[in-house]
Each structure stands twice: as C-alpha cells, then as structure tokens.
Image (cartoon, rainbow, N blue to C red; front, side):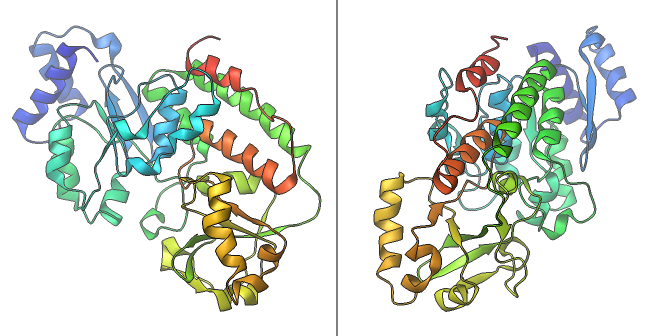
Length: 364
C-alpha cells in the first residue's frame, strides 16, 4: 500500500474508534484528499466475510505456516510475524532454487499468550492479519470485543482455519481446501496469475502421484510422540493431511475409540497402540531432524522398548516423519514427494522444482 492510503485508512478508523462502513470510509477518504478509488477492491471468504482493501498489502502477518507458504508462493515477502514461527518449516525450501526464507527471521506472537496489546502494536507495521479470528477466540480465548478492538486500527483479519476439521469453533462456517484458500489469498495480493500457474503445476503433480500409489490399502497412524505415549491425529479433510489423502493412505485410528487430539485431547500409550497395530506410523514434530537423526533418536529407542518393539511398523521399519501441520502449496509438494519416496520407494522427482522457483520469482 502507498504511505498515503495506509495512513488515511488507519487514522480514519482510529479516530472514529470503530470499524467504519464501506460508504462511510469512502467518504472519509475522499475528504482527506485521496482520489485513488481505482485501487480499492474487496475479497470475500468465510468467516471474515467481505474485506475491503484500498491497495495491495505490502506487509502482513499470518497465523500459521500454511498461509505463510501461500504468500511466499505468490511472490510476497515472508510475513512479519506468525503465531509460532518455529512451526513454519522453511528448511524445506532448500530444495527449491532461489527461494530463501528463514523462519528465525519471523517474530513469534504466541510465546506465552496471544495478547491484544501485541496485535495493536503490530497493526502499525502490517497491512493485513492473515488469520482466522475464530481461531483467536477459540484457542486464544479472545472475545468479540478483542477482535473489534484490533480491527479498529484499520488492519483487517483475513483467514480461515484450514489445517484441521476437528475444532469445535469451526462448526458453523465453511472449510476450504488448500487451493481454495490459496486462490482467496491470491485475490488479496492481486496475484491470480501466479495462483493459476501453481494450480496447473499441482494438477500435473496429482497425475504423477496417481501413477505411483499402489492399489492395496495401507493403514497409517498419525501421532505426536510424548515420553511413553502419543497424541493422536485422526485423518480428516483438513489440509495438514492432504499429503496422506493424495497418497491413498487409510487411517488406522478412524474406526477405534481413540479421540482426535484437536477435538478431544486424544492420547494413546504403547499398549493401546499395539492393540491397533497400524501398518505404518507417522510421527509429527520430527521435521527438525534429518532422517538419520530421526532413526537414531526416535526409531531405535522404539526398537529397544519392551512393547514398542512388538509393533508391526517398528519391526518392518515403517516408522516415518509425518508432514508438518501447516502445509501451503510449496511445502505440500515437497512433503508429499518425500513420503512417496520413503513409503513407496519412489525414486524420481514428481514435480519440477525449477518451475516452482520460476513461479515464485515471476519468471512465467
């Protein structure tokens, strides 16, 4: 956004002390001397509704790494802040030429708790919060008044919690697929052409995946290791499971009494896991380790555990690192191919990394 349009929008709203309506805002902007009405546009998405922009956002903050990855894919600078920047797994980008992002350069908002005060301060520096306000209310314990107070700065919220479909706060509004959400963000950043290039690349990738997925139904349990227990994740249509959906895996936990962690704080010990005995075990929270480190620090101790060593997946060396919770279009390509290699023995590239680089850098 230009300095003039950003100052105009934010200060009109701050002075009024409430979110102005579209017509009222337009009138105030006109009275302050801005005649750049052609730059104004709106984007509509649940649950935020219609969001007005008086210019393309130049700076932004995001909640989770899936939306951060979308922004990078659309050629934007990384977000100024995330809820938890260490859960944005930027080392994956090392495989993509000329795409360099380091999550350590991004501020974390959720060190102890998400406070309205830090959002009010951040609103001076960013043009949009790419975050689902319902997540802030459901998980951050914010009130409607808190959301309105932040929006009164003139920096709007624009987001939808897409990574899981098991949060109760999401029951009354639409879930979006990864590419539906991606398309909406492309409208915000006015980068529809880049989105369409990624969509075409993704279509080719899906065709390549179909050629390598075996016909037999393999079962998998998605878990997050604790000490001698695991948090349980039931595979749903959320985007954090897209790589598993695309690779044709069935959920070993789906028809059991085990609860999902997101919806009910589900957890199992080794004895319960042995009763289920999944063909494959995918462990979350292990993206920080190489495959060698993962085997040494996680798999080998399981082989030496009295109960864990009886698991079929442990005996057959079918324990793997799961993909991250937050997958945008680039990370999803990389994670899906990685699992196809590890689980199915695929030894070829399933998408063109240079093509990804070209789209991100505008060479198309």
